[in-house]
Length: 181
Image (cartoon, rainbow, N blue to C red; front, side, top):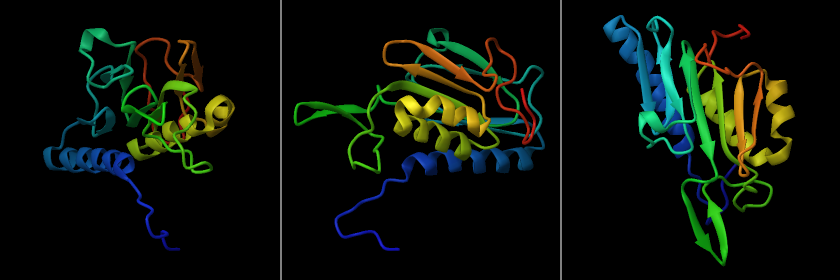
């Protein structure tokens, strides 16, 4: 399949998550220790975690100060990623746009969710889930529930939906493949 002339693909989001996964695995092998790698808020861990897991803050913007996050979760395995329609926005033709494109329309996905965060066996997998959830809009809750990964979705009006045992406190967010929280 060829990309039509004039169409550009931006794989930065997936590349960022893959880079985090690969860097974490490589550093853990080289140092024989546990490691957490965060690239723009996409988090990958490898090796043995510290007691209680790696504490990771969840916030609308990954640049927020550590004491200004919505929640802290412990990541022990795999990866965690967030996608947002409220950050990386701009105005065009009188409408606010964001960077996540709905492939069905070619336009920014409807900004139903302000923030979606998910845990998975890798950062790439978590990133794919969160980006898809933004595109799915109001249908995301059941689709993420069916996927089986813990996830937290925040609507633009502030209502929070959690699925598949998303931690209510700082217990483990990401579980080894096949494990359920």
